[in-house]
Image (cartoon, rainbow, N blue to C red; front, side, top):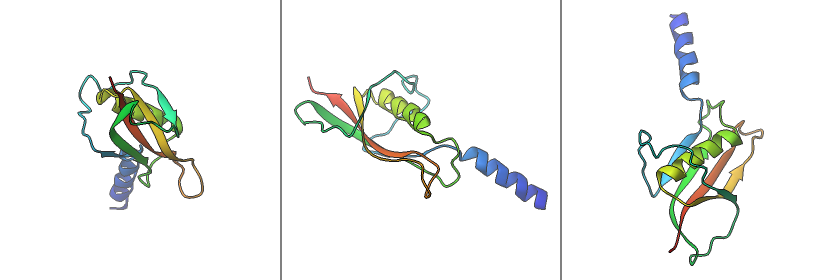
Length: 117
């Protein structure tokens, strides 16, 4: 019985090893070919005027509590895939938390934008 619990615990750690993703204002299909890193630009803490671009969604990347593959580089890959799947023109990180005593993960909130024509 103890061995079964140990195996189940190890599996839980392996399954929940990435960022927790919360999408606000949009949905995507992760199986879509568009869900790939297309090299979309990522800005940080920029003021984006309404006359330049329209926000088409927001995303939160957080720590699941069991995360161990949640660096800033991992977050960048997720953000780019989300932006590409949504056909965004760029991403603006508006809030970020570096690894600290509270979490070993890089956490952030970002907005996805489409340029106005």
